Amino acid sequence: MPNQRESNIEDFAFDYIQSYYTTRAGVKTILVDKAERTRQGYVADGFFSYKNSDKRLFIASLSIRNSSKISSLLTGYKKEGLSIRRYIVAALLFAATLYIGLKAAHWAILYVVPILAAFAGFVLSTVLEKKRLKAKVEHLLDDIMHLHADERWLGISISSLVFRNNDIAKHLLSVCQRRGVGVITVGKRAKVVLMQEPQTQTCRRGDFLSHYESEDRIRKALLGDSFLRVA
Image (tube, rainbow, N blue to C red; front, side, top):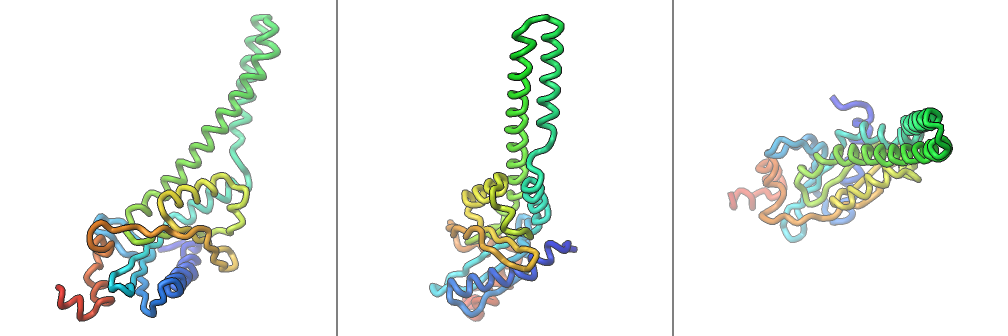
């Protein structure tokens, strides 16, 4: 069962993406499906398909299953920043080197090394924690790449304001841009914001619909008699 955040996304993101393609492609019929499974077992939470003017089928997928995890990660970083562990590491290094300096009765160890050690520990902890958070973001986006489609979308139930001055949110957009994934957010007031448009992918053979278990049903619905003749 989807949680409340995912339900909110389904209520508004589906309509937004359908309207997006209706306006862009100028088509009247867009099939909208949910929980479409690929032949490899991955699930597209939203699935949009229509026939282009050149008679080719266009497929778009939407992923929202990790919305709550991504939202929690981005919001937590926005509100609290990095954890207090950086300061603990710096304090421990300062205390340890200060103790060594006192024991050794060496002025350099007593006055210089503790400050340098604390600073180095703080910087290293900061770098490692940011790297860990960015890796977590990338991991949460991995499933999207298995949802073969002309265009892929990520939906997040979060205010677009969370993306302001947020390094982790910027990293998410950067990763999505490199992977060609479009990003939309759905705020508390049901405001859908297009953060980033998707990049159209090229299918090397046939079309992307062949990757899905419901290929025959969708192809028949879009092509009708022409599909039956080819089949």
